[in-house]
Every structure is written in structure tokens, then in C-alpha cells.
Image (cartoon, rainbow, N blue to C red; front, side, top):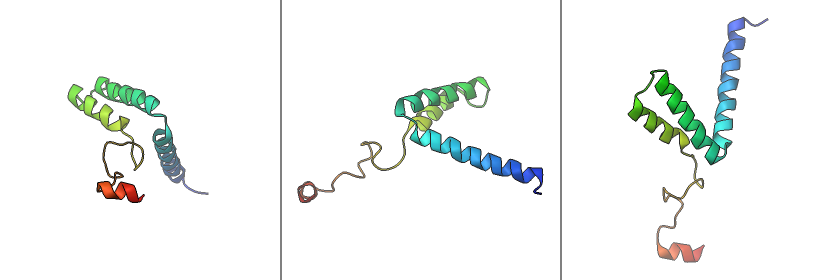
Amino acid sequence: MAPIWQNIVVFLIVAAAALYAAWRWMPAGWRRGAARHVAAGSQRAGLVDAQQAEKLAASLAKTSGCGSCDSCGSCAPKSPGDAARR
């Protein structure tokens, strides 16, 4: 039988993966609201100040991966001729 600490470590890894997956696939509106709540809670707990809480909320609210936004320009054609060829 495995020691209890191994079960705890496995549980924490699986829980972290589940939270990441839920956060990643959460609708953007929900993610922004949850990010504000997380940032406000960390500020109330004294972990960050107001400016850091704003940065944390902005960072958590961002989506990741190509195709999830159009602000980075990495998927845009490099020149006008590239768009015509596609």
C-alpha cells in the first residue's frame, strides 16, 4: 500500500490539472469575473497590493494560444500578397 503522502501528491497534481483545464476552457466573461474575484481575494488576504491586484486580474483574464484573440498579430499575413494567395 502506498504511503499517504503519495496519495496527497497525486491528488494535488490531478486537482491542479483539473483547475487549469477548467480555467483554460472557461468562457471569457466568466474568466474575467473569476480573475477579478481572485485578485480581490488576494488583496484582502494581504498577499498583493492594489496595483499588483490589478495586474493579477489582467493577467488571469487573458486567453492563451493562437486564434483566441486578434491582438498579437502572429496569425496575420506578413504582406498584402500573402492574403491573396490564401
